[in-house]
Length: 363
Image 1 (cartoon, rainbow, N blue to C red):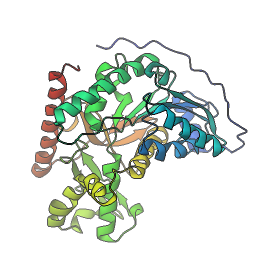
Image 2 (spheres, rainbow, N blue to C red; image 1 turned 180 degrees about the vertical axis):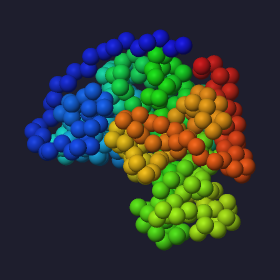
Image 3 (spheres, rainbow, N blue to C red; image 1 turned 135 degrees about the vertical axis):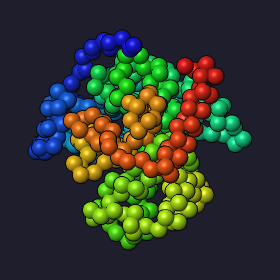
Image 4 (cartoon, rainbow, N blue to C red; image 1 turned 60 degrees about the vertical axis):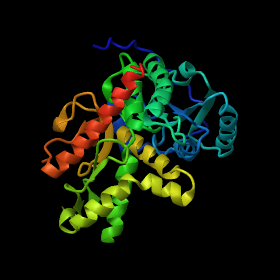
C-alpha cells in the first residue's frame, strides 16, 4: 500500500503580462473541478525539451493550446549536454512574446525539475541503438524514468498529471510509477493518442470522409508494432464503420500500417515523428484537463483496473473518457474472439517487457 503523499503548497506568483481574455465556461468548470482559479498559473515540466518533440510542443503549450487562458510556467528538464540547446529554445520562447507565458526555467536537476509541477510531459528517453537488444533499451531507460518517478512523487503538486511520451512509453511509465511512492496510479499515463490519431487518419482517407465524422476509435495495448487499432466500435456519421470497411483491408493494411507508421515515417523523412507526436501529446493533455466530448472517447495507456480481463496494474491502452479531470475506462464493450487474441498478444508483450525490467533490478 502506498503511503499518503505529503501535501505541498505551490506558489501562484504570476510573471506573465496582462491577460484580459474572457475565461470560457469550459475553463471555469475545469478550474472548479480541480480546485484552482482560472487565473492561477499552471506549472508544466517537459523533459527532453531540447529534442525535436519537445521543440514542437513547447511553443504550442506557451500559446495556450492546452491550458487556455491560464498562465503557464515552463520548466525545461534536460541533460547537462542538452541544457545549452534548451537555453536557445527558451530564448525563442521569450522572443515569441506569448502573453500567457510566465517564467521559463532550465535545469538538469531532477528534483528541481518537478518542483510544484501540475503537469509533466516525459519526452526524453534513450533511443534504441543499432543492434541493441530491447532488454538493454529497457534497462537504459529504467535508469532515466526511475529517478523521475521518485522526484515526481516527492516534489510535484498533488494534482500532477504525468504523460510519458518517450519510448517504450508503456513500460517507461510503469517504471516511473513503480518508483513514485504515494502517487495515485491514475496520475501516470503513457501516449497512445498518436496511434489513435493515425488510425483515424487512415480510416478517413480510406472512406473519403472528414475526420470530424468519426467517433469511437480504440487502440488497445502497447505503443509498439503489436498494438491493436480496433474499428469494431468505430462510427462514421453515427453508423458502424465496419459495414463500410473491407475486413481484408482492416487486417492486412490498416492494422499493420498504423502499428508501423513510425517506421514508415523514418524511412521517408529520415527522422522519427516529431510534430505529430507533439500534437498527440497536447491532445492527450488537453482532453485530460478539459474533458472529452460526451459522445466520443480516445485511447489512453494507464494502469489497468482489471477491465476487460487486463491484469490489474498493467500499463495498457484502453478506450477512455475524461470526466471532471479524470480518465475513466469505457465499460461494457463486447470483445470477440479475434479482438481477444490481439489484446492478449499485447498483454503478453507488456508482461515480457516488465519481466525484463525486473530481471535488470530496476524495480
